Length: 144
Image 1 (cartoon, rainbow, N blue to C red):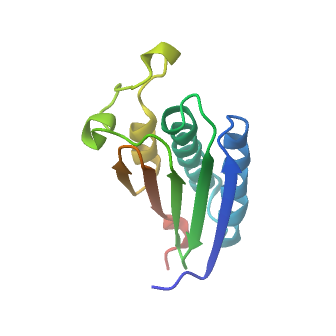
Image 2: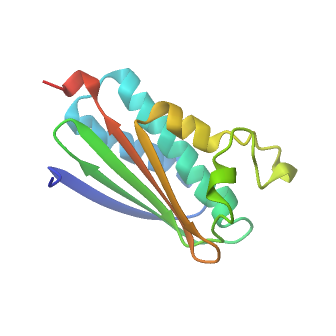
Image 3: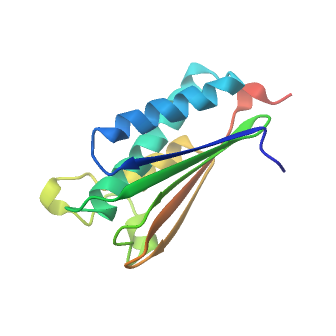
């Protein structure tokens, strides 16, 4: 299925760019006129994915985070990519309360939060090459 609209965004892995990415994703998705709750779900999941890329992917270095959003008739697919350190064990990282940065007092709930707000979350990662998180959400309010 071809998207009805698509956008790409690149930004430096600075923590203040997390809110920027969240707002851009919400503005783009708002073209479909989802409910306020559905829009909040997307914003929360994007925040978590971007924060993971910045905090865990690049740790104490600077890199580029990429976000691609594809709109379909009643859904969105959002891909967040970094070229950071990658995840050694994706299944372990997806477990609630697991964190690779206990020094930062992170809750280890990033993937769990993404999964609770989106219909599907896919994670692809290779150590030393980076991580890609793909978020999928169908807007129930738009199904006809």
